[in-house]
Image (cartoon, rainbow, N blue to C red; front, top):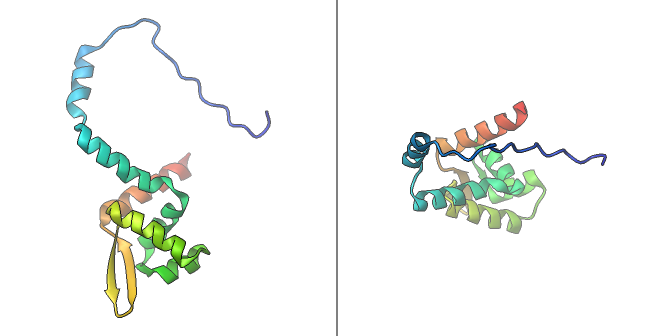
Amino acid sequence: MAGKLRQPEIECCEEHSIHTGAVCLARQAMPCEEVTSAASDFFKAFSDKTRLRILTALSAEELCVCDIADLLGMSQSAISHQLRFLKQARLVKSRKSGKTVYYALCDDHIQTILAQGIAHVQEG
């Protein structure tokens, strides 16, 4: 079919054999269930195109809701909804200056993850 991407074939072992040492090392490296659950929630924030665009904009400059709404061509209500999600996920922080609330990325980790994700996609 034209336009459809072909899914890569997954190869499986031809014989069932557990490599106990490798499994043990992998088990030791894995974080506990609570941490993987929190990390899963963290990465969900990056899985929405609008949230990703907001994060990208905030990686360049601190912006208010009006700025982001104008930049993305969306309503302030829609942007506020996404910012609330991002704030709960601890990806963005806010500060009030008079009647205006400005948003920025929480820390350099967010900027690094965002930049690496975009670079990875652009290389592919």
